[in-house]
Amino acid sequence: MRLTRRYHFAASHRLNTDALSPQENARLYGKCNNPYGHGHDYLLDITVEGTPDASGQIVNREALDWIVQAQVLERVDHRNLNVDVPALAGCVATTENLAFAVESMLHERWTLPARLARVRISETARNTFELETK
Image: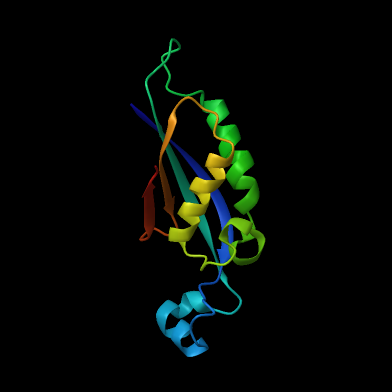
């Protein structure tokens, strides 16, 4: 059985890597390479899986919300992903890398009986990234 909870956050980022020249970065990332960055209103779906317990639930939803709030949303909401999120230090702040960072943040304090099964982030109406977790 799986449960998915949806969360919202706003953040900015700039797609840029020191491994490329300014011209190569501009060519690769286009408008997302704007030196001033740009922002998104992200949708974050967290999926857990498990067997319902005596209460008929696979996870206490308040406990799941607390972990997501404390471990992820407080770290990324209204932040510059390139500067303010240590989990993204040293990598390009793509939403692909953000999904891996969210997984890592959640595993730091995961105490729920249900298993973290998926991290899904919608960056725009056209770009959604999904990570099946270990």
